[in-house]
Image 1 (cartoon, rainbow, N blue to C red):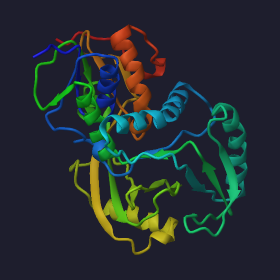
Image 2 (image 1 turned 180 degrees about the horizontal axis):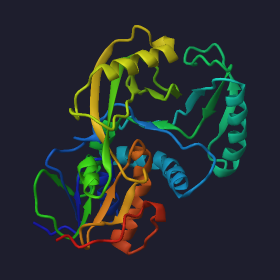
Image 3 (image 1 turned 120 degrees about the horizontal axis):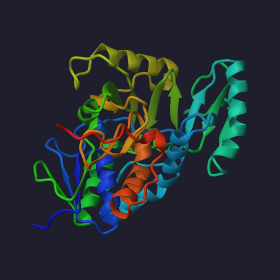
Length: 341
């Protein structure tokens, strides 16, 4: 068996994006994950690829913007290589506005978006209308942006795994790490470096609004998937005893979603999900040199924005691992490496 140039520990969206980018450049790649592909947070239901607010610009927001722009080609290439559907579509997003003050603020942000988003997407304020997929808005207006996209997390992660295999990589539950080693082990790995996990619960409803924009209302994401379902999520639980169990908190999410968007009233719940998302101390992803494993690397911490960040995470990690080019933002770096005793 050939010795891998790159070993990725973890078969979630970050780990597989790194493996895919390296395999595209000709590296011999192996992915090791005892739990299998999309076993953690990447196996969820929601799939909101939504941008940060276009103001107070920083490295994290710029990185995410670049990655969201890359996503069209990234996921199209995955499907072209594998024939597997990812559920990706850039259908935009609607956000109801609560009052005149919120409307005014949204219009200010529209001006900043025209500059920060480089004309590649828009953020605009428009009045509500009587189309079916229009959320009620107390302020009489909504924000519509064309940068937001959606994806089916579980299918997309499996498609990415298929792409790694199509490029000659291997994915197995156990193995011997060789070559350069990248740790992408989700919330368990984040706990090793001072981060934590935040549990989320989500539901999938039977309601066909394929091709419609996603909604963001009452701090909830409402995602009309291309397969004729609608995902709703999610909770943010810092304290929990059952990482994968759903409970009354999810019932509250569903109730709030229907209150915010009554068109979903009566839609059957066909699946529920709970899992733990890796959260870094800074809330930004952690990329580059691993802080506790000498001469090894990390790509972790895609808390709530992992799928949106994944295309560029793969790119910059492949640049670092294969070409020695370090384009990782300073805010994404962990503390200097410490030799593990």
